[in-house]
Image (cartoon, rainbow, N blue to C red; front, top):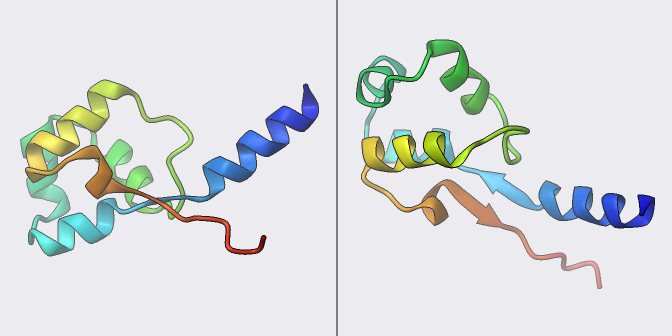
Length: 85
């Protein structure tokens, strides 16, 4: 069981979170994203300051980001293949 969790942790570390990039591409500020999503500033700040997938990201929050930024979930997350093998 522990080995499975370690493998899952490694897989999750290979998912790059791109909220900051998508916001920059669309020229959307934090203040504007707060207005569009209704999320708290602390939530958005936490999600902006992580490079890997946020530790907690529910479907409703992901949907709010997608609607506010006119994007798909795949625009906000990028899977980085393991090239070490």
